Image 1 (cartoon, rainbow, N blue to C red):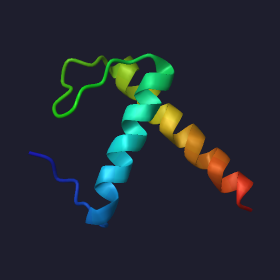
Image 2 (image 1 turned 60 degrees about the horizontal axis):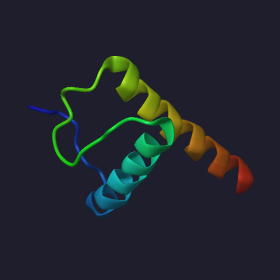
Image 3 (image 1 turned 90 degrees about the vertical axis):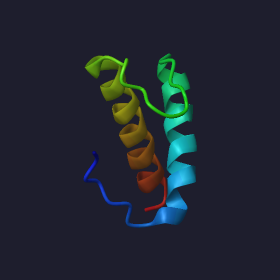
Image 4 (image 1 turned 30 degrees about the horizontal axis):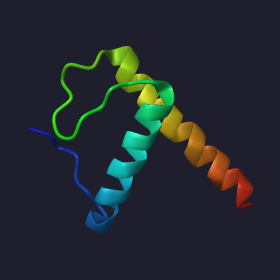
Length: 62
C-alpha cells in the first residue's frame, strides 16, 4: 500500500499524461494502471525524463 499522499488531486490526470508522454520519448512501454513488470532502469529513465523536462520548462520561465 502506497503512503504517498496526493497534495493536489486535480493534478493527477495531468501528471499521468506527462508520465505516459515521457515513457514514449524514452521508448518504454508503459500501460495504464500497474506497471510492476518494469525494470528499475526503465522506471528511472521515465522519472529522469520527467525531471529533465520540468527543469527545462522552469529555466525557460525564469
